[in-house]
Image (cartoon, rainbow, N blue to C red; front, side):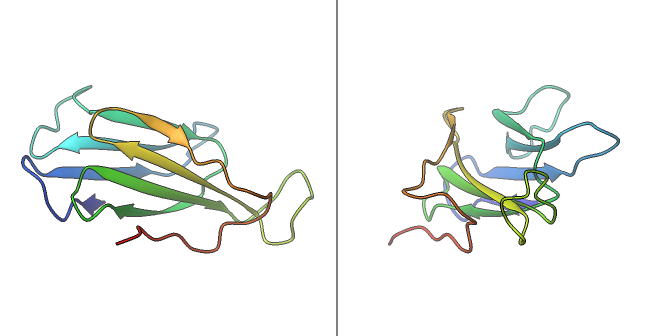
Length: 110
């Protein structure tokens, strides 16, 4: 769970890990509207045993760094990672990186 640092209304991001073949999921919610199907945005991940979520300083955007310990393709000893951007306007996209390889860290530029 990650609470946005600013913005009105406040927003919350939740992560549910992979379970029995079902994908992991990150969802954005408007605080405190957590009813069934009431999320603002949702992204499913099949290669995400853990995530790090970082809200923008304004609370309008979220960076989701995914990681799995096992790289089934055999390309990396360190597992697989990915980077995604979600925002409170319900836009979800994968961040295209200049080269292939693991994502070690991400930060918002001031």
